[in-house]
Length: 393
Image (cartoon, rainbow, N blue to C red; front, side, top):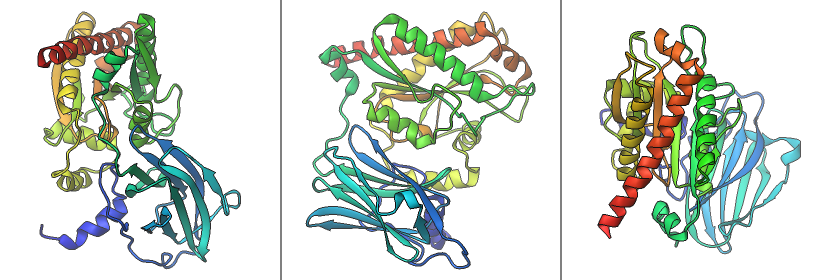
């Protein structure tokens, strides 16, 4: 590394972007004082709790990212984080949030000294923690996992054993203030993928075999890491994120399906940077940091899910998109897939920036065919993974 001195500032400014990055007992902070030249302290505007299947998260909403420092205490077990250069909005002053999920008992907010707010988590017992900030919207996330917590188990197998309905989370990309890609005829990605996702849910619900959840059912903005948190908190068996592709080359067209991976091609790098709302340079730096991390324990199952969904979407739309291309399954570092505790894929249903495919994406018949393909791919995956499990046993 030619410029090692740039790594820590990069991590702080970037806010560790990924929930998968582990942090030591004390979270790094650029300085223990409010930022110089700041006339007004940055306000904390909210505090929220996000459970997952294996951990507990407290999210602190902010007006902007700020320096922070975290410490762990053992008797009684608690974790505190100091945020510098901030103050509390009046409704949050000395606020206590009861959680009681077996990991975190409660969270407390108070001004520790002028310009410094302390967040204290009273813990149910010893455990591991990580603290990271995210920029859009600005927020600090404190995640705690029980020390004796086990890694996520094979939920698909457990679901079949328990004879319960499988839980499938469908994630319509973008939404709210984030329109996603926009076609030459001004068609917005967020509208297209929400409509397709609603169709997928209706088709899955009609079988009576699944419990289907949407990360959003309307035109609202949901941060990337909260989408997989929704799936994890509901102990979902599958996660499918639905998007429409974009390219500066207006002739680009076709269908592709992605899994989380560290070996993207050039087009995948461009696409991931767009979907992640970051630059190619920053994405490359994050990739270097993540090289030694295990991205997901569900990698093989995600490959199979990508294969079946991709194949079914291409087959279902072939009669409508005569010039369509099967771009196959690929891998890239999509933040929306990081941290998923189940097989997870991201589909790019067509190029909204291609004039002909944008016209197709406006049509009910094409949207329905894409939805049918996704559903068929999910059911093919479940059948195939069942056969693989049977052979392994």
